[in-house]
Length: 140
Image: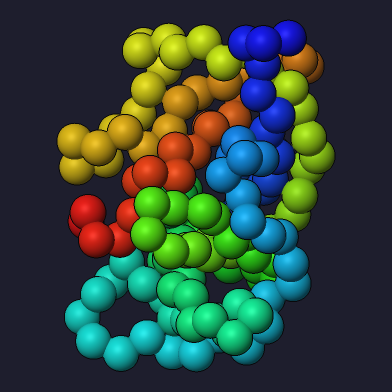
């Protein structure tokens, strides 16, 4: 039990992903997204999260899937090193406890930075456990 972590599984464009529950600040319906200005292609826009303006990270930057145009009406606010960052998701798939053992063969990187780790559910279905440190915008 000491080696286990609780994760939240979710779907985006037909693919399965997960986050450690300890890395999640909030899950909610998407309010109005304010458009992003400037050249930062990592940010889709901003939302008002309890009086604080928080960036919404671009789907293309978050997920390595080809968008199928599904309506993402939920967001997950992630706890990062500096301030929250939001990602958009299609559906929530539930909670699961998994062993917290690192397997370097299953780690994926983007631009040399750890992005996710491939995990298998109890039913044998594969999904990606996303590393929230990837979303510290100042580092990218």
